[in-house]
Image 1: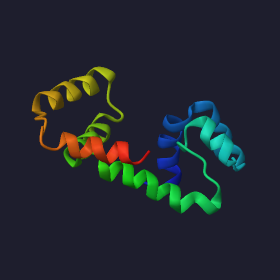
Image 2: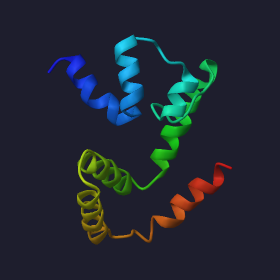
Image 3: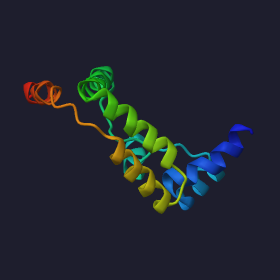
Image 4: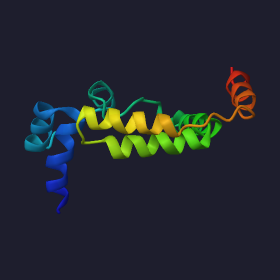
Length: 116
């Protein structure tokens, strides 16, 4: 599969058919604000703050329960490009497998509240 084939399949799912069509047919670049508005990115940071902000986000993820993070990543990957009913069924199955770690709750709470 070529990059263009992947782009024609993935870009419309990310930004919608109309914007994907325009981007692919014109080759016109979009700026950071447009990327944010279309959901291509989740945040725009000044260049001089970019690495610090990426580290802040990574720290938020690191402070989360590692099992929950892994399960969430798996659910997102498995449920992507499936029907809503299938994705909801996957989530219901995952919920049945969850075992809260009561000993870990105070540590995670403290880690989140110490940040500010």
